[in-house]
Amino acid sequence: MNGKRRALLKSVAVTASAAGLTGCERIISRVTGELGQSIPDRIMVSAGERIEPDFHLLSRTTYGVWPGDLDRLRRMGREAWIEEQLTPETIDDRLCDLRARRFETLWHEPGTCYEYKKPVLREEITRHTLLRAVYSRRQLFEVMAGFWTDHLNINLEKGDCIYLKPSDDRLVIRAHSLGRFQDLIRASAVSPAMLVYLDGKENVKNIPNENYARELLELHTLGVHGGYTQDDVYEAARCLTGWRLRTRWRKGMVQFDTELHDDGEKRVLGVRIPPGGGERDLDRLLDIVCHHPSTVRHIATKLVQKFVAEDPPTALVDRLAGVFTKTGGDIKSMLRELFSSPEFDIERGTKLKRPFHFIAGCLRFLGADTHAHRPLIEFLQRMGQAPFQHPTPDGYPDEAAPWLGTLLWRWNFSLALAANQVPSVRVSIDRLMSAIGGPPYSPLALFPWFTGRQMTDPEVAAFDRLPKGSRERNETVVGLILASPAFQRY
Image 1 (cartoon, rainbow, N blue to C red):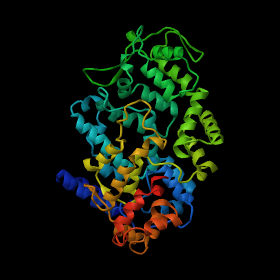
Image 2: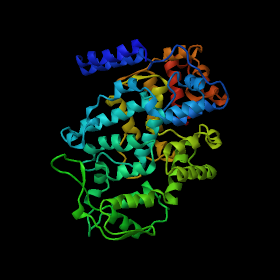
Image 3: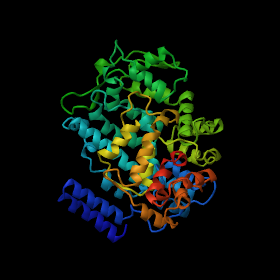
Image 4: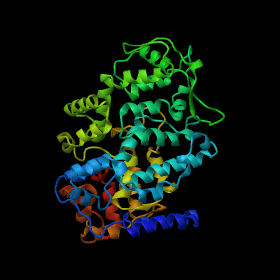
């Protein structure tokens, strides 16, 4: 980082400390814009009739193409870009941190979060998640954090989960999103938030609570058709007895109570767990379920469905399962295999963006300036995908069908955003148009930037039917492109 960048980053903290909240946000917006989170003078636009491979790669591995990202990918090359994204700790993300790290509830121990009101906790974790999705340069990491958040879903609205989820997001999801699968599941199993959400803290010897054990087998590891039985659920629950939450000193932290643990012999999926294991029974159980062939295939299938197609190509699932087995569940290795596969490049523009992806994508493609205040979050709520609020343990669905009812709200958002009518969000359509270098009011020039390909004849005809006044407004053209089927898919 050059001297100017270092000086600006240092000065913003000093200046912002003397400013009110709104003033602080103005300073952050100015500094991040000067340091590179704005629209460049020139940006590359795809020119082919079919979605270009580099655009497709960015569409699937990020929340949307930020102005300048496509140019940078092409300079680096696909392999180097993927490797950079797979090592997010090497990517300088301080510009995103300026916007997203200042929510103090995300960095506390669980007990401290009890000192805050629920609306504050809900707002901060929601805004933080959206701002990271929009502004982080560690885009693949953010996409994977979203993937595992759904896989290990915890609803803020159940019990004390709202006080405990911030540390779960930091210490479970974000700590292990690109790590080893069993480490992720182990961290989740003893997460305070998960112990509340799936009643693990109520699980004691002689009267085991099977809720977490069932979801561990059905959702987190083997899958619905993974071959486990009710006896396996019961025996797994016995392995998990004794994990409790502190209620006074260091409230919300986890402890193991040997007196409440069933220390007898267990048998899970045909494997004997000898008596006397104590808290080690958890790791013995996870060794069994995390490396079971059904788990290997279940996780490989979900990754292929996430990044390739709802109907996953069997050959690719087989190869990812092989990588899982060979590497002991190394997530990076599985992703590396997936993104280099021919199947990944074939399925272009076939998946429907979920509401969170759609809204974050609109903001990224436009190079928007926002701090994600309530008016923006309300659109996510209306579309049914407010972060951490899915009511059931299976997480927000990734397939298209459940989201087709959100299209009207998407159209409303698209037109309002392009017209700068979403409070707390600013976009500059004219600057984007200038960077693309096309003639004003031209759908033919703007469309490829948002979709990765040229317009088809039916799409040209649809825009030609616009009333003359509408055709002469860049914001109307952009709003309609964002609302189009081509942009809804990726």
